[in-house]
Length: 163
Image (cartoon, rainbow, N blue to C red):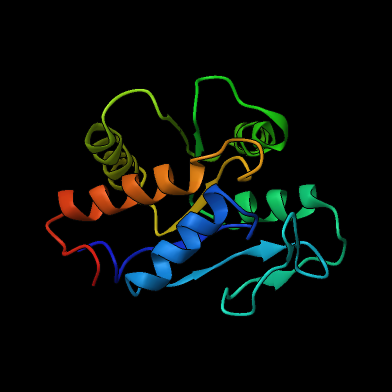
């Protein structure tokens, strides 16, 4: 069973980050991670319901680096195969640090993506998963895509979505 073994961390930005954190909250999966000083995100201050710690600086790169550093592996979501803007950073940081990395983009079947993510978690014995990807304004539909893949992953594991 996944939920008791996994913690999801993310930076709290709109889009992929929030989808992962909201998914964790809905399904009783521990969550956390680092966010910029002031709990800064594109839509204002990050809500306190997200159990995030603030970095000393307001720079997004610091929270990205610390979330990669403090996790067992990183999954980076995107709508297409090419990464835009700040979504390149977690890939570069994971490679530089030698941490397991998985890229998932929208092309294809969400169920296949979910199986790929599950294999990634199992193969690398990931207990703390960093979820990253574009903010909502950069790639509309990102929140829904990440949510769908994560719910499919629970379904693939035989757990009940919506729990």
